Image (cartoon, rainbow, N blue to C red; front, side, top):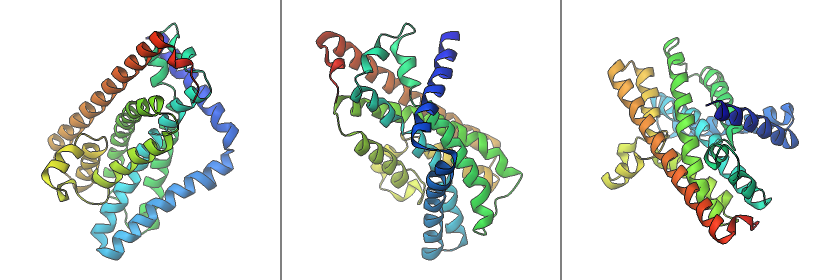
Length: 264
């Protein structure tokens, strides 16, 4: 456990060091964060245009929560970068095992994702005239944390594709996020889709957690909310299992044929 905590700490230090080479606090705040706020605002206003105030609130809440998923799945880019730079074999021979190192490689995105969602949660509803029911809305914040954690596992699992098919990491990232945003109940209810597609969509992160957030805001029973949270946690655990299996197979194959040494 101590080794895992050390990996988490070092991963965060490395991740934020990388980010500091790209962003200053000003460029991140007024560039990246404002861009995310504008995205959520755009969809909320579009919801108001095609519907009513209830539609606007539905869309706004969905697009605020999904920001956590969007940022946490950027782990795809972080892991693909290790192969491009030729440092993937170094992660594979880590004394603590390759899985904790791989899974910790993009943890900084979970921090920034939480900040982005929290800022949007506090700022956008009153700004757009869609106030949330406080203090009940505060109970949704831990749910967003759970969504972020499950989405990170989803991103780690899909990173396996980017590690095997080089040069497709941005395609994988945008497809991963786009699928959740389209079919995950962000802008329209999951029940809108045909039954087979709805069934498949419920295997995605965000879906059940977002339903729990909406339930909290609407005053749903604690049993209903806790049930949804349990399913969201199970979905996230399943994606982590897929990520672990994928990375185990990647490393095992790389050790046999030396493919981990090949930079993309």
